[in-house]
Length: 373
Image (cartoon, rainbow, N blue to C red; front, side, top):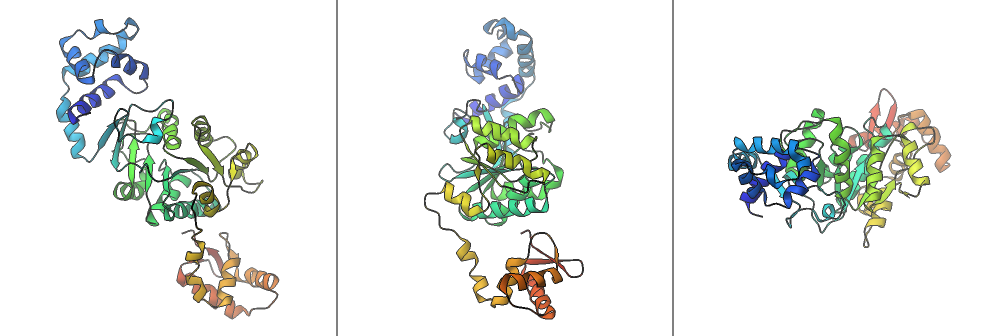
């Protein structure tokens, strides 16, 4: 498809309007987008199409009367927005295979590489500290192993996992429920800019389309459709995250879930998925072993720095949790875990060293927690 053909497709896609897939299919049978434009300008498009589309086709005809096809397309391109149609080779292969694949994708940055595995990392917007920590762990772990991270750039698990993947030097794609020229949510502007530079942002909605609640469920099928597998970090028993899971299962994608405490509302969705047959993964390594035929756990490499630490420092780090604990509690845990005592001043000194190294953060006076990143 030439750039000129794509310019006419860009016009037609907007003129038909979102959700009118049946009209697009019907128009495909009477000519190319350019030919349809010419029919609309001449005024004989109505007689070429079924009468049941008579009202809708009026919008197409009206759009053609004052639309600058080439100019609008070039202005879009000048803003760095690319467009790929389902008939082109560059259209994502994974997405072509789903039953309701979009006709068009708009994107900035770059689309996922076909040769690399991709995982959709999704979950609750109002996540817990545990969820934040695990989203960061999985996002970074997948990225370091060369696995692409797909998500919706939403607040919470989605954005945290994507940010972690980019910071680890990997690729991530944000799939939006609005035009790619609109950052939603606004609070994720930094992530939006980083995705454009290091990864990509895509949408089936034309530029300028603002976010609306009705647009997000269809968007979710693209998130799962772009991936080889879907990982749920945290989810309520009834949530939008589980809509994506349903779509993934219909598309034949593998679904994995992170288990959580039975008393935690944001773990109930994950625990239910596991009961229903989703794969249980508690570390990035477990997921990577499922995904990659030749996977060598990078934990050994990441532990190289720790080998140069004294044993007390290594042992203390193992006891620090993502939930803040007092130095007194850590002292007691140290004695219970290792069968030997450690003086409070030495413990505090080691904890402060771990804070300086970036592994631990001090919360309040003498409370300490594992760093989320």
